[in-house]
Amino acid sequence: MLQLFLSAFTTLFLVIDPPGCAPIYAGLTTHASAAQARSMALRACLIATGILIVFALFGEGLLGALHIELASFRIAGGVMLFLIALDMVFEKRTERREERAEKVRNATPHVEDVSVFPMAMPMLAGPGSIASIMLLTARAHGTEETVVVLSALLVVMAMSFVALVAARPIIRVLGHQVEAVVTRLLGVLLAALAAQFVIDGLRTQF
Image (tube, rainbow, N blue to C red; front, side, top):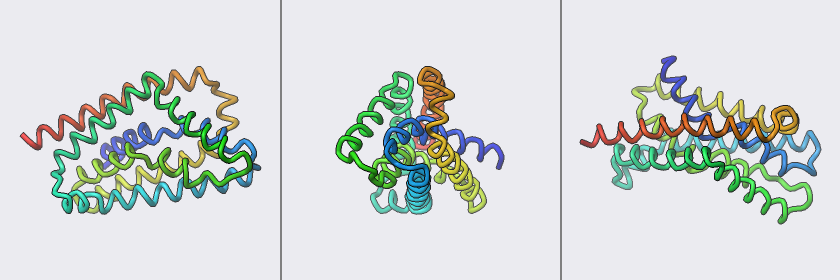
């Protein structure tokens, strides 16, 4: 159970990337008060958690309704995560997040609620995190293991909330250079996890 929890936690932490979301959120909430920023961070994390739990519990049924085999989804999900890992290593993911945040800032110069878009979706509950939670729950056997995976998700989302709330101090302490190094290291680790998903899918299929 501990190994499953650590595996699920690591995968979700790398994909959701709370440290990477923090500076984006800080930029989006420049004109907001501390109370408003906390409120939006809480709503964003709760909405994202709800979306991911729905896909975790009912995603496999959706695949069945679409006549998609689980092995195929594992391979596709692994490829998707690998592309995210490449973006992290070459800093493309951060650039795209910043571009999306800049568009929102330009469109909404006052204090605007950014909890649903772009924070809850697609930054926290994006395609990569949805694919990841579906893959992890598909690999879980029985209710106990599913609960372990969901527990890992809740821990990661709690850490995301803390990162968003502490976004401005985190940026001041770490700086952009340290953030870039950490992002690259996490990208390499995520690439290895993505390759394992593909291997599992191919082994199941053939």
